[in-house]
Image (cartoon, rainbow, N blue to C red; front, side, top):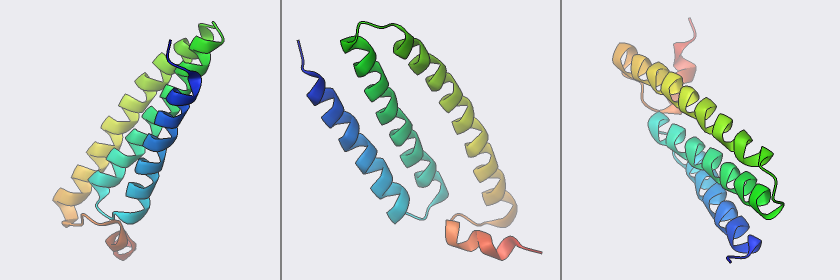
Length: 100
C-alpha cells in the first residue's frame, strides 16, 4: 500500500507547479490550465485523505468538485476565447486597457 505522504507530496508538487505557472505566465489560456492543475492537486489530497480514513464522503466531494471544475473550465475558456476573438487580447496585462 502506498503511504499517504506520497499522495500528499504528489498533490503539493502539482499545486506548486500550477501556482508557479499561474504567477509567471501571462497567457490567459495557460493561466486557466494552471488553475485546473491546482484544482486537481486539491482533489488528489481530498481523495487520499478520504481513502486513508476509510470515509467515502471525501471521494464523493471529489466527484462533485470535478464536475464543478469542468463547468468552470468551459465557462472560463468561452470567456477567454470571446475576449481573444473580439479584442485580440491574449495576455492578462492588457485587460486593464478594456476600461471604457
